[in-house]
Image 1 (cartoon, each protein chain N blue to C red):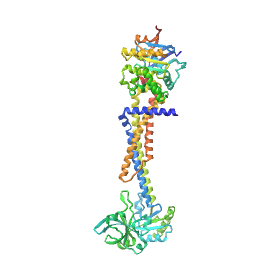
Image 2 (image 1 turned 45 degrees about the vertical axis):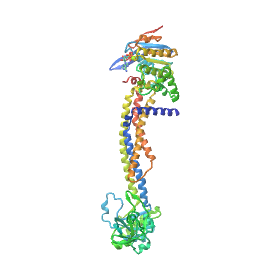
Image 3 (image 1 turned 90 degrees about the horizontal axis):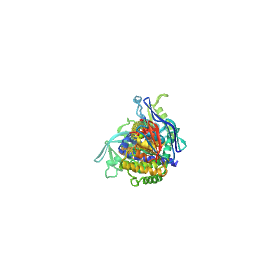
Image 4 (image 1 turned 135 degrees about the vertical axis):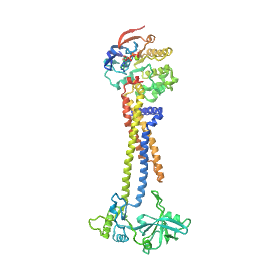
Length: 226
Length: 409
Ligand SMILES: Nc1ncnc2c1ncn2[C@@H]1O[C@H](COP(=O)(O)OP(=O)(O)OP(=O)(O)O)[C@@H](O)[C@H]1O
Ligand SMILES: [Mg+2]
């Protein structure tokens, strides 16, 4: 089992009120699963993604990733896991605005000590895979939304992560560009990656094999499709 | 180790890129450092140049030379003590000459200002030094052409003179002065020698004077003028003994009661170098306080801008953390940025300060070489300020929570 989440809660304390962003969630995800997370706004989808991606920490419960209990780890240990195991794709792309595509893509490699030349080679290769070989020198503001998201995907893949997390990756894109991005994710899944995808759209969710639905921080349904 | 170093390189490049993206801001950030380092280096360079110069000039006085004079060279607020002192007399010179066993050379000096003329050429207010042939040794003067005063000149109180190079140039345009007769006041003197040119010190020519036998001078102008007596020992280690001996002789001649204070002074070069050293030490202290304050202000400026920069780049920090940057790497990135911006200010300050210092010295006709110390000081100070000022903002950046940073608008 790649991911084992038991009784997970995330509680925010806001002015004396406890907000349960996640409320006693149990979830298991296998290697090479393609999972879509759905639910209304504020239901806790992003919170769940961030905890799975080790960007955020849980309040209660336990989270075991790849056989490793993540709940007790400190900031630097989590950073290392993010670097090695996780590839993020965000709705808002989250690229460094002043860096060109190549530099954005190689960023994770800088933090694991890969040498300059190897970094450049790998980043170019990753850009080629997402069809942006000719845009390596462009800054984000010189790229279209779809191209930016592909740069972000190349960055997510550069370290061969065991999980790719995509939080509404098509949310800021038109439907045609969104479809291209989904094709890329489908390809990734076919080549063996585990993908967790947050979306509002049923059509996008149908790219996956399994859909879980959240409401008020709880999983209300979990179904295999096709 | 190599791993760390390649990392360091990495962050240097990152920092450079970040600074390049905000050229104007970076320059303003480092302005305080630039001013601080410029101040320190300017004054440092100036003082170093002055030091070399002053010590080279002062050492011309000679470490083995003492001067018996009415007053000390340096009077520190107790000037009333010296008000009633009597001039050093010719008789006292005779006594020192007769009784001193440690002095290798001894010369009396009487100084006065006179007008000189030769034919139609006239120069006014030239120092006339009335002395003996021994003055060549006590003052370290050598004739360029002709000869110095001789014992027979002195014994017979001849009307002869030896000229400083500048006086000779002024009086004799195209003629060889040796053997010519010039007038000092209304008396005629034969020129027997011209001295080597010595250039200038502290903006004053050291070649503008004329030397005559002391007997001649006393015969013409009377013997009432005060003297200064120069005594030289060829062995500078014996200078304290020489001073004791001279003091003893002077006290005996002047009949100073035992236990009473000297009513004359014995001066030597040390007093000047000591005073100069005291002055420059004070100056150094002032410079370092001023420089220190501007560096402090500069440091606060850097810290301030770095804090703004960290806030502005919260999202960037979030992104870096999201892809796996550990705390120390974020810390390093911002710290190196602060050090880099500060060192750039420091480097500019070194260049400007060195330029300004050299300019000041050039005004005084002193040349200097590039001081390694000044570069080290400028660089050391600015780097240190960078580290101190950059640490807190960098630490703050490194502690940011990744998820909050990513959400930061
Ligand atoms: N930093 C925070 N402080 C307080 N409450 C928070 C914080 N982050 C999220 N929440 C709350 O947690 C709940 C879940 O938020 P989350 O972002 O996971 O929702 P979501 O399902 O991703 O919504 P959306 O579809 O709009 O992105 C919300 O009620 C939200 O207000
Ligand atoms: Mg969300």
